[in-house]
Length: 88
Image (cartoon, rainbow, N blue to C red; front, side, top):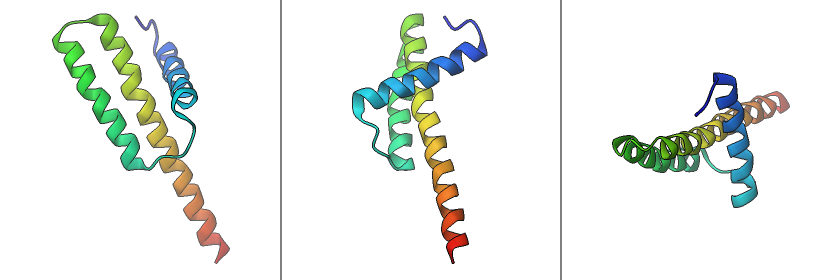
């Protein structure tokens, strides 16, 4: 079980890195990241209904990591839009 908030956040970051190694580091659209997180949310809900603590913790990371990637992609897009606006 996650002992602290900081440990959870570190584990989410690690999970995102593992996902990039396993699935490639190509950029995805916000829609893709949301769909990935949504799929895992279904798995998380199933784990909660089964009261399977180990699976709950695993799926928490599998939901949170794509949400982190979604956040990062939105931030990248905002920076790119600002840079494009400054170029004109």
